[in-house]
Amino acid sequence: MKLKSALIAAAVAAMSHTGVAEENVLNLYSARHYQTDEALYANFTQQTGIKINRIEGKEDELLERIKNEGANSPADVFLTVDAARLAKAHELNLFAPVASKVLESRIPAHLRTEDWFSFSTRARVIVYNKGSVKPEDVQNYADLADPKLKGKFCSRSGSHPYNLSLMASIIAHHGEAKAEEVARGMVANFARAPKGGDTDQIKAVAAGECGVAISNTYYVARLLRSTKPEDQKLISSVGIVWPDQKANGTHINVSGGGVLRTAPHRAAAVKFLEYLASDQAQVYFADGNNEWPVVESVKVANPALESLGKFKADKLPVKNLAMYQTKAQIIFDRAGFK
Picture 1 (spheres, one colour):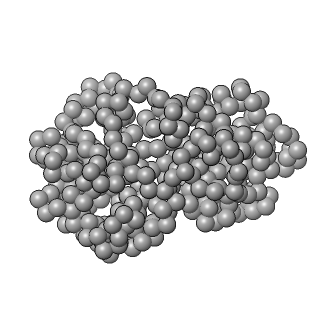
Picture 2: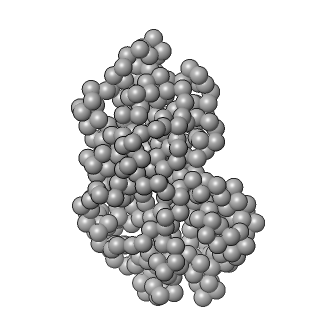
Picture 3: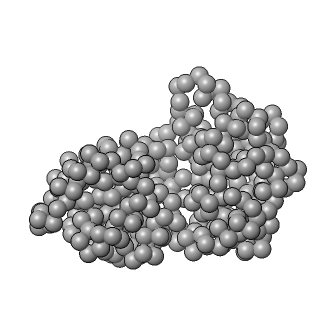
């Protein structure tokens, strides 16, 4: 997705360093592309009087832009999805440490680091065809490598961050040897070469092209909330399993962000992150994309998510997902999971 030219033109004008002294401005670089975030940002401005100038783009584009802008970057905050992408910004030394009693008290320790914070979570579940796969046969991620599923497993690319983070969690919990065994078993069970996104995998399972796949929960919830008859028919033919409930719990990933080291409006940036951890923002941030709040006391009334039932979530620290990303990619490459 190319950077939106109209947004850029307006934002660049507003972000020019001639206006750095202006206190009621926040320059946001966001790789989140959800329409519901509009209400989130508008509410922040209404509450604080701080105007948000926003540039949207793909994660790598925005990170490269911030790097190239260097000390003159107008960006105050970087938001994105996936722990590995947030960790990449950290590795590039783009984030500044943030000391905030609000963030420390509201966001659980395993969902934050010293310089970036999670604001919503999503789980990676197993989706199966009710007519061809028994749920008891796919209770764990490792079951996807079982020979009984030969020719039944579909997936998006092994190089996609969602799958890399899942494999990173398997490495963290079980070691590299077990992780590679699982990856090789998955490849042996492919119904077809990896392609498409998570919604494509759900559709392939519903159509019988595959018996089983993995997907982030918000893709499932979108179909459950859809009013289109074809979506309702599709989702009715698949079942959902929360993996690893008797072990470490279902793998989760996050949306999050941090204050940039060169932020010209640092006070506004910290205030914005603290706002994202508020009760009202947590509902906007999470429910708008069918995710869960990170603040445990916040309740989201989302019938689609509620219909999936309660589950035990993996409490692996998000920074550990990033720690094993490179090894996860090496293992996928060796296993032929392209």
